[in-house]
Length: 235
Image (cartoon, rainbow, N blue to C red; front, side, top):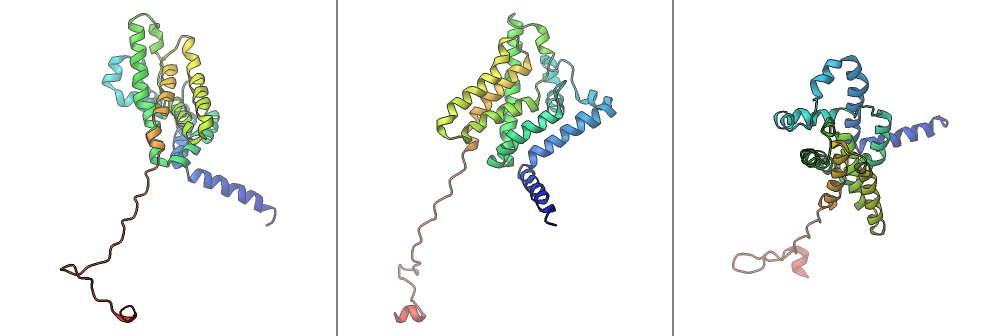
């Protein structure tokens, strides 16, 4: 029994950590199923969700749900689930512990959908004006990449003020460096997600509890105080 206590304590700590971040580990479980189980066994299921050339404006307008669902349920090509699990545990889980599940979901959604649309719009503009090759549109915005970037950025507000500017600058540099080497929509989406995460500061502020109303003595109709009874009246 004594030998099993350390293992039980570790298992309990891990279970408690995961239970406080249900959204993080539910999403990670879905990615495990689609990447290692559903994809290899049922290639047709992957093709049903994936969309070719998702940044084509016609595809995005005609099938926006499919485009964003594909990026939500699947890892990028060549992505490793184990690395994703490490990053989710280091970034998403602490953020969900801090913000709560619903506000964590809101940050991920802002970093994925609006930031992804912004990245696609910027890239299409660059292609039309000759600043980027057409092949740059043959990529997909992934919720895993953008969610990690957005959550990493919003964690800026979890740090002491003295470290916030340096940390935010490091996140933006890390997400922005790939833009100098022929960016595609994935690189632009990651950088836009970091900016979106920094813009989510209002979601990090907990509402202040309302101050209690001052108690006033109850008065009888006509402005008279009710008669005191019992020991209070005798005093």
